[in-house]
Length: 396
Image (cartoon, rainbow, N blue to C red; front, side, top):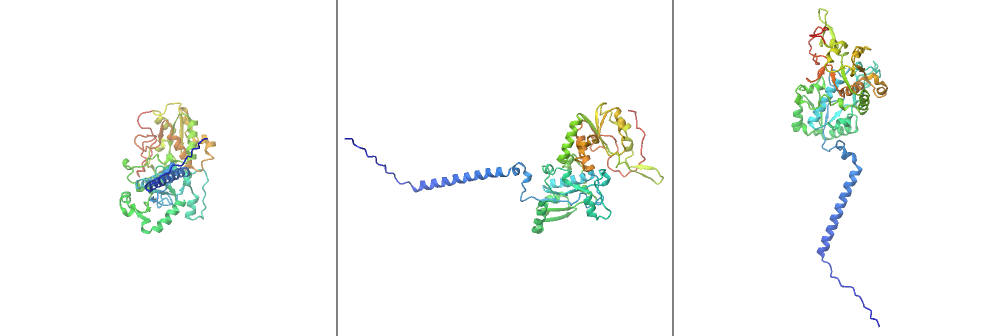
């Protein structure tokens, strides 16, 4: 008969309490690490913009700089306002201070447009309007001129009509003396180094009673310039940049000149009835026959020459066609008319086109290495001289 084997389970010894404790701690550690990884991954997928674009991650310690709701106000041009270049000088000055202080700049949400500099006819104001209404009617949204996200890559900015700005204001009121400092005549070095100002949430600067850019009186010191002249021109709104790129493609290989006449050809009579000007050679140097002579050594015959100018006389530059193929922004009106609302925007497009030229010749020198149509200084010397229309020296 077969013998069945009976298999008995082996008896096991009870586990040590110490081993159980160690295993429990290890499990808890593994679970904690896993949850941390999941949390991190979850954040990276739910908040991609905050990782890709640091400027969107607003720090709790972020501080702000405010210069006012209007560029150049307080100032002598609060009612009429100045041209684009004048206002950009002031805006660049304020942005430089924000960059120096490592603060977010509170940018005016609108830019004033002087009707003298606008031929589009979209800006109208009634004589019955109060000052604020008149200013609002003669202004356009700041983000219609500039790409604020692009500017913020260098200097963080917010608009003074944004929710964030209203939050900053309410927070500054709650903080009392630590919330806001109203300063006037304080150097930017003191604003940065003195704890009285450096730890304040919001600095409200009262700029120069003349113009904002007076706060940058040392701009002739090249080492003091933090943002070059080309900074704001290159920060144009995306639609303006796109239009300029399309026109540059259509132009191909080209050169460009900027001929500033209308607003600079100012004369007045002295006590003897003789006309005088602060730019005695400008009228002469910006006439076609003199332009041909001046640029001959820089621009070879047959080249495409893009001309940007505030000259209002039709066909004024036509004599240049004897040597060059002329192009103007008006040649691209089908592309520009749907986009451009005023002459400030038009000049911003023209400026981008000129910056892309093989050879670019300005009216006045900005720096010593610039090519220019005239040797007269750009800055108003306050010296009124008799205009000169004859040629100097040798013939062309």
